[in-house]
Amino acid sequence: MTLIETLVSVKPGSALAEAMEKRGEILRLSEAAHDAVLLPRDPGGLSYGLRAALAARMARQNHNEALARHYDALVERAGEPAIAPLSAPGTIAQDPRVAEIVRHADRLTVAPREATRANIEALRASGVTDADIVRLSELAAFVNYQVRVIAGLALIGARQ
Amino acid sequence: MSEVVHAFTTKIPRWQPYVVPVDLETATEEQRAAMQVTPSNKGISPYVLTLAHDPESLTVRSPLFNLIMYGKDGLASSERELGATAASVVNRCVYCAAVHASRFISQTKRTDVIEAIFADGLDAELDEHLQAIFDFSARLSPTPPKATKADAQALADVGFSELESLDLVLSSAIFGWANRLMHTLGEPVAD
Image 1 (cartoon, rainbow over the protein chains, first blue to last red):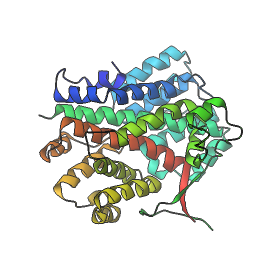
Image 2: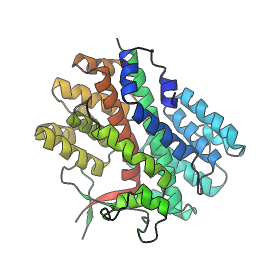
Image 3: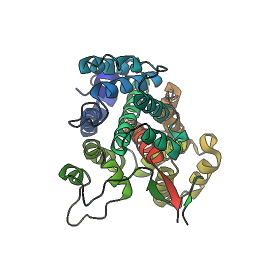
Image 4: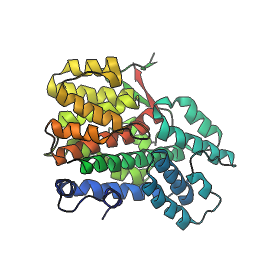
C-alpha cells in the first residue's frame, strides 16, 4: 500500500476505495515522487536528513501530524541529529546557508504567491546552487501536493 | 523589451527562469532521458530545462502530471482545468492560470467564467456546478488547506461520483505542485 493510501485509510470496498484502485498508477507514481525527493540517488547539496526535516516541517505547517511523523522517522533514519529540530515550524538554523534554505522552504509552503526573484538571489548569495534551488522547490512542491491529496481524499471519504 | 506580467490574463506569456537552466549540449544522459530528448524531440522548453537540474523528480513528475490532467474517463477535462485554474489563482501563478484558463475556455467556450474568476478571485460567483468545483479546489489550495466536509458534500450535491471527486482532488493538488515550481523559479513575461 502506498503512503497516501495508508494515511487516508479508506473504508475497504467503498466507492472511494474502488476509485482509488482505478487511479492506482497515479498513487504508485506519487510514491515514486516521494522517493525521488526524500531518498534520491543523488541528493546534491540537500542531505537526506535536511530533506526529511523540511518535509516534516511542511506537513506540520499544513496541520498533518500523521504525515509529519512519517517524515520524523526518516529524519531519525538519516542520523543527522543537528538537523532534526528543524522539523518543528518556527525553529531556525545556525548555519547561514541552511537558514536561507529553511526560510525559502517556509515561503514555498506557506506563501508561494509571495515568491520573487529576490528570494532566488538570496539563496544564491548564501551559497545554494541553482540545482539545489530546483531540488528544494521540487521537495516543497511534492509535499504540498501530497498533503492536499490526503486532505481532499479524507474529505471525500468522510461524506455520506 | 519584455515586461513581467503581474495580472491574470488568458494571453499566454513566455516563462523566463530566474535560475540558469540546464544546457542541452552538456546535459547528462540521465537529464536527457528525464527531458525525453529524442531525435524528433529537440525543442525542450526553458521550464523543462530548468527542472532537469533534478532529473529524478522530473522523470516521475511528467507522467504523473499527464495522467492526472489528461487521463481517460472520470472527471471531464475542462473541469480538471478549472481545478488547476483555481489553485493557480490562490497561489498567484499567472503563467499556470493563463495556460489552464485558456484550455478551459477552448473546451467550454465559457469566457464569462474565467472573466469572473480573474476579476473577483475567490469571491467569483459561478453557476452551481462550476461553483462547487471552483470552491473545493480553491479551499484545498492554501496552507493549511481550508476545504471542509461541506465543500466535499457540495460536489456530491451537483452529481459528482467518487471517481470524479478524486480526479478533482488530484488536479487541484498537482497544481499545488506545479505552481510552486513555475511561480517561484521564474516569471511570466510578455514580449
